[in-house]
Length: 440
Image (cartoon, rainbow, N blue to C red; front, side):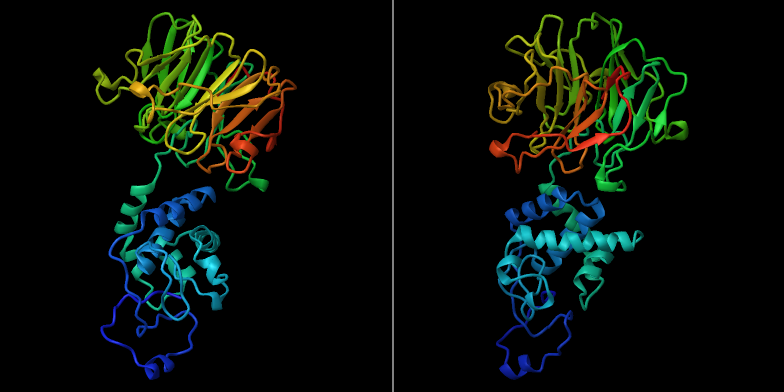
């Protein structure tokens, strides 16, 4: 199955080929298939995309890139050891599919990752290289771990920066933070990887006992500090307050223990609030509808502002009247690394603005409506937030419905007609959420 790593000079004789052993998984050092010196960028992008779409762990994803580099230098080769083909040098004779399927990079990647996930589950302590070897069954088992550095560089080249909206524990899945009827702050960490049917929220993970968040009128969660852990931003009275995530240092791993930055002023009129990486720099920006109905974006300036304070002044003021918007959330809907806007208008229709930073004048993020669910009625929705609850890199909608149930609408933009992201409820979460004051 595995591609020759040692190139042979000269022409091989038919007798030499005929004398090759019949072992199914050993490398045949007498077959010539020259390796390109560099990766095929399109191939690496597809392998990465398939891995992320399957929500594989970082370890399994790295195993895929180690394998791809060892076997083909991340190229879709039409030659190899015996009948080996493609980026992972998979063999039709060993059940990897037809030659046509194996030469389809997406199909080959899906085949590799499916087996690698099973290997990881069976051997939780294994390295990426050991997982790769378990899948590939190479005669040279140490090669995969030896190229870890190169594989990480290849990953970094194609990886889309993850928008950590509501990702409280930095595992790549959006977590739920809320304030209950008594004013206590609590959270549900995402359980997609261990729950039945991949239901994201199954039980309460933490609660700040005795806390009083009853005065908070708006709550949003996103990675303001750029450390990979979602922070909280709240409007309370006339102040805007940022609570940096301290899960790695706080007693009991509690994520939010105290105020990090406080902005005094007249914030009480804020109608809608969201935090997302609108600029694509890895730091959560502030998006809000102000008292006058304007949509305003405060780009994160942590790297240049005094004391690392994230927000200092307005960056963009978007045209139009947003005062009638019932709910607003911002997160990366199309996996391009930039936060997109989702909202419910005065008529109850759900609509979205994809981020236009890369093409708009002055990098204004939101310039025109991208999609709208015509005839939809979201007017009874009590609470709404947007996050990547499924872990596939495409943000989903989480909503408290009129009847008090909590629903998750998984993003289906890759399969839904017209690319509209949301078509129906994917999961109903147990419990009565009607008393919850706010969610993020």
